[in-house]
Length: 638
Image (tube, rainbow, N blue to C red; front, side, top):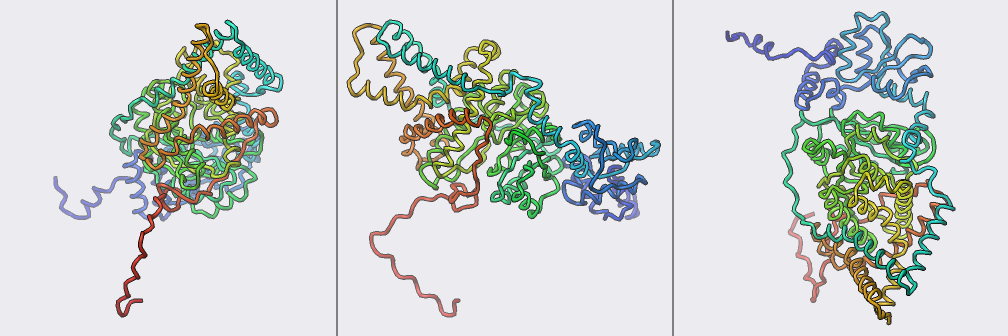
């Protein structure tokens, strides 16, 4: 039967409010605000309370004060006194803990549909819980159990999987033994005996096998697989975004703008800034910059080591998303990256536990060093990493724009807090656990150091972490070989310890090869001598090709034809890489877990404009004749 009265037709269209926000109607919240929250929840496929709060339609404190009034109980503002025997992180997962002054009294901070369940059950509760906000509850838990949380972030991996932890790491004796072994090997290789020639031939064969990965990657086709239809809002999972900050005040405003532009439903975003307790400058900037409600600042409890992976481990138990991504403070992210990653995860098998985004150096006009750094990154993230992902090989992760399935990350105990290149270690651990890394064809712009000293500090940290990872997983080489398989083990050998060893000996191998091949060496009279002479030429040429070809292909795929001439300089750039590797060895002895901080926000140029500077443009061509005088202004112009 048709409704004739307009009021009847309007009332038929008005649906009852979901119980998780329905109580707000009696609190004077405007009906259009509640209706908007319902509409947002319907379109994003989430509950109305989360949609309301993440959209900033009602403040967190106002919402939970109103909930306390609806339940007829007290609202507890900060500080929240908690009992000392609470269970972490379970108390934050369920949003409830026991109060210190009243041992049988619960303080609750329910989220989402848990609000509706609490309202429905309140009538049957003998003691209704005190209400507080989720933020106040988290701060109270961290204040009460900061030392326990810090210890768990640092030691859980070593306690549960000691063979996966880089502690205690190699000492002076282990490094001396490794150095002595290499020295003896080099001495034997130089002896003009049958044994020396056979060993040299074996080493050359191994080096060629390791170089094959980079050469084959450069020859792999550049055609990208067609992107599947992106998931609609209602089908997207909740996504946690972690950004560890330390002395990053200069880039915080740009970072907030970048994350606020993500093409993802606000109700399904869980963005956490992780801040060290003594970083007052960054804290002041975060306090001054208006943060959207879906942003959260987590103060990492004091503890050692002072590293990025420890901060990430603190936040991992707090992650509400089924997917999780790590970004660096200086990153400028493609707005569609999270949606694309969620889509690819939905299409991929469960064994694909991680997706690595494409990292791009954007301040190339800041000098020769950023240009060469940009070419190196193009080779790695546009050529080598996608090929390794296609071949299902182990991949040392990039440290940022790394997307994970959160349950898998938790099953691996997160990151190694003592490894200063935690990304490479985690990539290898995932491969050992039977997971694989996929390619995410989405760009994240980064800033490269423009001064040699800053570049060396950053690169020596990376090399030190590769050494830590090599010693950690080299404790049981037969187990690694069994778990990974022959090709995968060679790939891991090439890109983790092989990266450091080749960098350490790069100047000596180059000098020796040039002196022998150009300045008068000879092949000798025996067949073995001639074979090793030919092998030396092959290794020398293959090494140059492995340096040049991926860089050239990466530039061409990015459309950076202006950087192609600089590819020739990469062998000289690798001399700096070698210096960083030797500094890493010294630092591994002196300060194995020290984190060399890289300062950001110093870029003067930006090729894409993402870093907030002028675009990188070709220099104007000077005219052969003087420019004409400017035209006179029309009468009356200002």
